[in-house]
Amino acid sequence: MCRHLAYLGPPRDLATLLLAPPHSLLRQSYAPVDMRGGGTINADGFGAGWYPDGAITPIRYRRAVPFWTDATFAALATEVRSGAVLAAVRSATVGMPIVDTACAPFSSGRWLFSHNGRIAGWPDSVATLARRLPVTDLLTLDAPTDAALLWALVRSRLTAGESLGHAISTVAAQVLGCAPSSRLNLLITDGVTLAATTVHHALAVRVGDGGVLVCSEPTDDSSGWEPVADRQLLTATSSAVDVMPIPAIPTAGMAHADPTVTEEP
Image 1 (cartoon, rainbow, N blue to C red):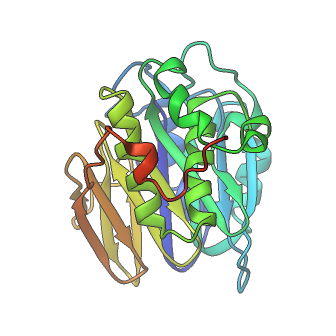
Image 2: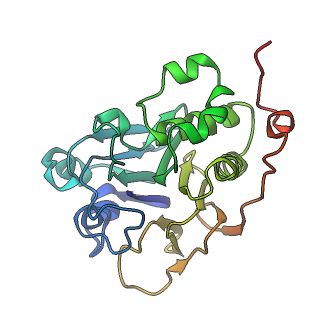
């Protein structure tokens, strides 16, 4: 069901963050420890996004091949340094396409986004939520996948002015209202802050050396890793982490209570 990672802190090269640790994201692509909801490896693609020094718009690299097969990225990773990184490896849900554009991170403007999990009952279970998006958003999804739809739902809230944490926690709660057994680890950053949800999937966080690292699985055996409990919203900067329960969203009358929804006449 995918693995992902986000880092904020002093600039570090991508190889140190993603390839070198003993249980790095690279290793998690072929030997994950805590796969839930199906799948044994994450070989259906990968991606990484990072912010060049002083930039507010990230650079992104995505490919629909196993992470361990891409020698180009391995060479690039030793030369690229960044203080803000989001990366993921993918295990595609059966029936969803294996293409570059289906791989996280998804991106728009200054944001990078990833989803670890699946929407139960896709696509019928969330058809009502999807109908609330502008038609152009649906026509321009990166791919016909649950992750791409989640990104469209989150992005609509961000462009309406919501914070990272409020946007992803509200979308997670709304999807749970439609499909309660969904797995919804959402992860997002704008290069300065990051936010993540835990819904039926593991997440760990470590603060130290001037930075914060959030991962589906700890990347090493060092002390300092803290597990994040289920159904929590984590928000962080490079020096501080806050964790709180995901607020419940009532399903009845949700469309009328949602300020981002525009109904067709």
